[in-house]
Picture 1 (cartoon, rainbow, N blue to C red):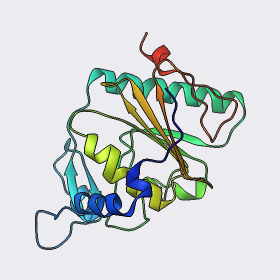
Picture 2 (picture 1 turned 90 degrees about the vertical axis):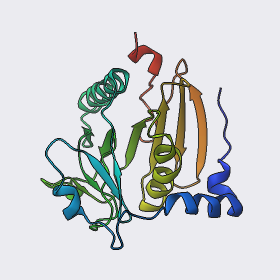
Picture 3 (picture 1 turned 60 degrees about the horizontal axis):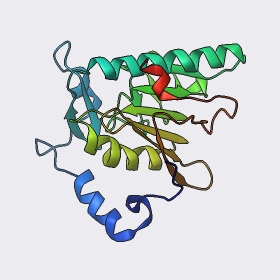
Amino acid sequence: MNTNILPAVLSEKSNHDMFKEVYTMPSRKSDTYTTNDIYSLPEGQRAELIDGVIYDMAPPSFTHQKLVGEFYRALMNYIESHNGSCVVLPAPFGVFLNADDKTYVEPDVSVICDPNKIDDRGCNGAPDWIIEIVSPSTQSMDYFIKLFKYRTAGVKEYWIVNPMKQTIQVYSFDGEEKAMQFSFDEAIKPGIYDGLEIRIADFLK
């Protein structure tokens, strides 16, 4: 399955307005949270911060972690074999998406090609390519909130990998915006690397 139609959430004003209502859900105190609150969480507790709202993160499943590991290995092997300069970093790795203290996310896989964005705390600004593995508790985050944030922050390519449905949504925001859907059995060429093909079914053998 392969479609080349942007989802309504990106192309229709009425749906965009509806999405903003979901996206701007109120925080749990009158003042917005900052990255200081993230760093003050108890050891072992993970959360993300989007526009001052904290979202707790549930522990990942085996399939989730296997996919993260396989993506990391495939991308690192490709980059190293082609003398590439981009860096692949799996979660937990902090991304200060807007280079401010109101938004902090931990994408499952981040590909960063500008070394000036990286310091010991994480990535300051948008990675070039982000991959998120969907779990039942993260669907609204991955398909709506993060889709909007990654697009507006300057991420060039965003993949949403859904093990439950065996589908991958590929969003390209670099130049002409487009969205495509693939099955796990299909080979996908990332926009950032024309010579690379990824078939997610191979990751789960």
